[in-house]
Length: 380
Image (cartoon, rainbow, N blue to C red; front, side):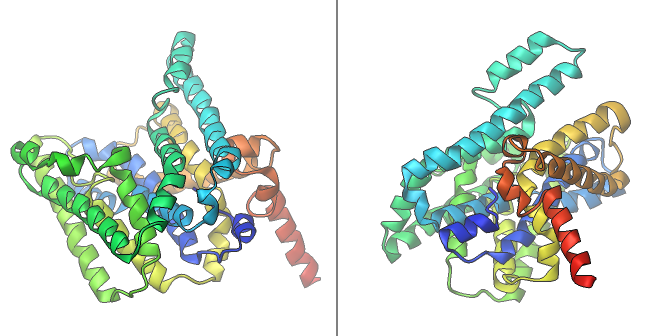
């Protein structure tokens, strides 16, 4: 979830500079892995091996988003205030989800020859499941927000030993994910330890959510070389495991690349810690990506519709060499559209997830025009 400058100031907390870099990278990653989904499923080739490696890294996007949300929520005193949750946090998420669910239902009806019964059915289905595949993230995020006051009270009510115990449980859940992925497919049901699997609430994403708080508040510094070696070994484990399973199954298998299991969470944790330790400062690069960061929720919500449009009307996306340029194109087009939506009052809140006034001070075209005008005025 986005927390812009005005929200940081409102709660009197320091801006977490490294999160701006992480959000930008995670946003690119999530678009990349969706664009690459088609080419990964059409058979193994030289391009497939490259995509396997790149997608293994890109699947850290969702764990990174949940880690950042977990840290920001669990270090914010307002999280304990249920009235604040009900009045301010949940309405923004629910209204944004509702608006994009209507768009998803309309688009699905459009590409199915204007089937209005399909439109009505998708609207009703959105009450209990995503109207488009990537909207699952909003359902999970809303669920985590709903329980956030209880999580906050539980975590902050623990002593040092209790928090170590909590971290140990997170590690155990992640280790179970490693074991499940590592064993051959036929043995996986036996590796699915039920008493551990039952701790994987919210599809296992609560693990990343809590881990974000644990890592974000951790005082001990971890050697960068150790982080790099761990990340490289884990990436190799995920990449080679995906290749093994795909060869064995005769079709693409994403068990190792599951974004809620141990291997991807560990890789995301390495990236999270590295950025926290080395890039938690302001810079020109951070200021340049700041508008993109503020619009990242809207960009996430629109990008899959643009990809669907391209698949239906422009490009099927079945070759590996096109994945990177198409990813870049979708990111740029999404940014321009959501920036424009954020320039329209009311629409900004519903579709970009930002109050209009906040958008004007951080990311929309009003903000950009003011900034450009200010630069020219100072030069003159």
